[in-house]
Length: 260
Image (cartoon, rainbow, N blue to C red; front, side, top):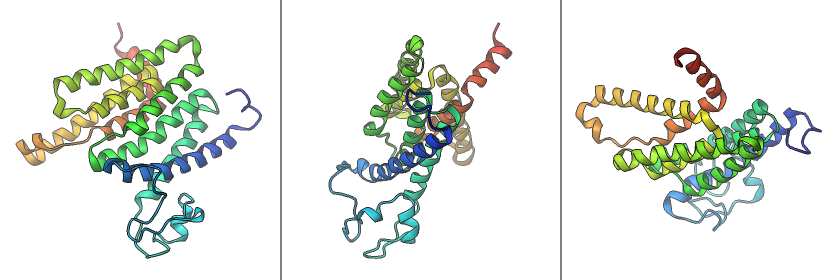
């Protein structure tokens, strides 16, 4: 447990993490809409993109406001769409599950940071084929700090894993810039910082899923598939979530099955 948090049960901190995740998800929807356009994330305040109606506090409650307003702007009745509440819910649920799994510990905090940041990363990468530095780099710093705080005597594991994962993808980017972006390199930095050695199965899962999609596209479109741009961030996010919960058993299984 993090000092001072042991007095309350884990479920309480899971609820707190879920609420914080919902709030971060609300910010993430703003980032997903504004960051790819080069707009400020703080100015102007949240508003309807159609009628410029500035949202009041009661219109900004994650998920609840969307449901109360039936998915429409209170001023002009323009449909808001389901992306915002889905991002908010995903962030809240992942944060809560991370704390339920790892407890109110530094490890749990690192896991929650990684999990919630992956949500807007996937949303932005799918739509714009970009990975936002404004979210990934601060998360990498926070995740690295929390990972080191969870096991100070093995601080080097988090540092080596972060730098190693980023270096691996950086080499791939140099070798084939069209198939890998620097955003993927920075995301690998975050993954390595939080996952430690489990970043290895995370990247294996990511490349396996990416390769599988490549085979499907080749079978469906033939040579044209080689010119199709497919964002790699969602595959990395999938690998990170798999490794977050099952990484150590995957490493143990591999060592038991194949290690000499």
